Length: 307
Image (cartoon, helix red, strand yellow):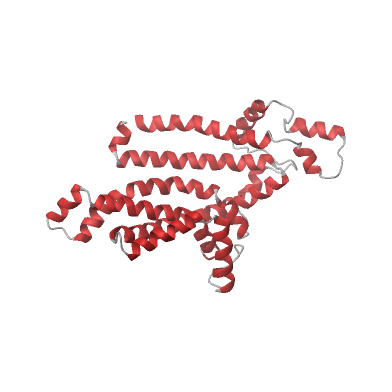
């Protein structure tokens, strides 16, 4: 309990510091978002003053942030400069991003761990070399290059997957963008699993188990692999928040009506309340997942919670 409370107290300043930093970066940009919203059409001075007062744009930045957080803790993410509540604008989009993130996460878990186990058990062989070379290539290539290439080759040329939209529902419409989104994390999961498994197969307890006459399959599955998955589980837990936040590019490529697409459109329109609202929720998800992972890691490894 003491370990859990300690981790929870650490998450509180992280939340406020992160959300303030994002708020400052969005609303401290030069220019007037009200004038940007109006475009080339001039607005009467009275209308400008009314809108600036309504959205507290003339108040100091710290005051604006404080007023925003008071509303946020009550579940109110504010409203756009056109008067539409941010919560209603995002309500129908969270499901798309969540399904995309879950698809990518499952892809990382199954394929990444599988490749890591194959490479670890065949260290120095052809399979190990292929996994290391393939993951290095995936890490080096930007996600938008992987996305457009997969869309053209697997979607248009081969016709294996839908190329855009969510008309065919889950999981069909989410398989290709999920693989693209999860490819970067998959490379790290495979490498982490491979390295950890190689180290554990050399450990004293593994040699002792083999000396007792246990079959190799039992030594791997019952001992080495279980211990090897501890850092992998930690990475996968943390990476789920990254998948939710990193869907902007993927949703744009595959035209998915999720949170990432809305953030991209809001940045173009300089709709600061939408960007801050989305990021606030994503920060909460990221901190919550990290907190759960920390607690799980403390359960798996007593040395962590004692420290």
